[in-house]
Length: 76
Image (cartoon, rainbow, N blue to C red; front, side, top):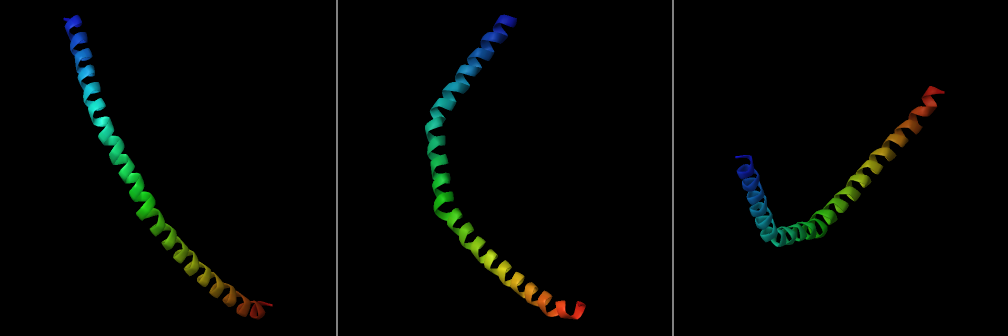
């Protein structure tokens, strides 16, 4: 019985490996498409939005610095 279980597991492993080998080229192609999409669409959008966010933060920091400068004379 144990021998049969071992053979069944080996057979199952072979079938899984065969299916994976059949699917591997398709998986690789899909991964390439995802990477291309990320590089072509997502990364530029993130960079653009990141620069906008940095500009907004810089503007707010400049306002804060002006506020601190104005109020610094009151504290002295």
